[in-house]
Amino acid sequence: MTTLKEILALKQVEPNRFKSVNLPVRMGNILPIAFGGYTIGVAVAAAHYDVPEKHRLYAVNGNFLGPALTDRPVFVNTKVYRSTKSFTTKFVEVLQKQDDGKERVCLVALVDFHVIEADSFMIYSAPPSKEYTSVEESWTPAERKKMMVDEEILTQAQVDTHDKLFHLMGTLIDMRFTKQSIHGQTLQGFAKGHKTTQEHLPLTERSSADWLKVREKVETPAENVTSLAFLLDASISFQPLVLSSIPLTESSACSTLEFSLRFLTPEININDFHLREWKTYAGDAARTFSEARLWDKDGKMVASMSQTSILRPPKKAAAKKSKI
Image (cartoon, rainbow, N blue to C red):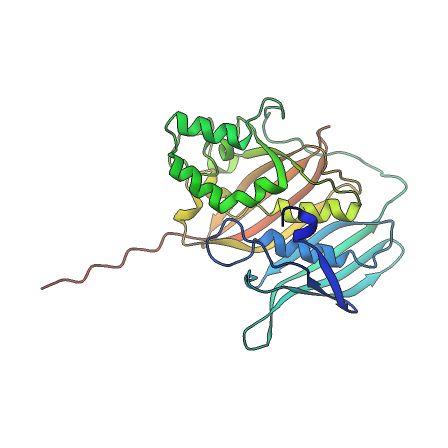
């Protein structure tokens, strides 16, 4: 599977029930656990069935109840909660059959659609928190990795470990690291302790940013937002680590608990480059709150995903038993 369409493909098996055509995909994890964006993506894909043509997705609010496994398909159940001229709201469950034959719910979400309105009373959006290099001036991942090895910021073995964890994303999107981004300067925190250009800033004012577009052309509004549901989930849960120049591998647990995905305009074209910025805002009680925002090439904010995530410290090494 090399395209988002293939990865997120579903077939309807009953009224309001769908089954994944392919097995879930893994990313950012060595365990046989699906990437969270995959689970959100199939939920959004299923929710689009039988939605009025002029209704556009604007919000997905959900909770992860457990990981999806990569050795079996997922099922998606949908139920219409609201259906009016202006709005459609669906409740969506993503489930998997366990070895005992029982189904376990992996994700639940409310998915909301809104008709394209004739006029807007006010149109505005906030800019990114910083100025970032253009697409043309930013690094490709390959360029940045080679630079980091050549400058002995990372070893080739460390780059290979990163590639093993995140190879899938590079096959799906054309990505560029902005030169101001901690994400790019440290290769997602893999350059542990590397001094960045944002060292003088407190954690909540630091940021990462990249440019991205899909490699395989998408055509319909549903394909655009379903692709973004998958893509925007990436890196949010461990962004506090990235912004602190700490690799994901140092935490004992890091995953999303709940999320809010918002589309702020009815028409998005992810075939074109968009700027994505990550920031984190709070952390306590082994939970963090972080967000990714997305702007089009004209500087209009078009989407946002915020998440509460679990982030546990490294497990303490077991005390050695005395030989006495």
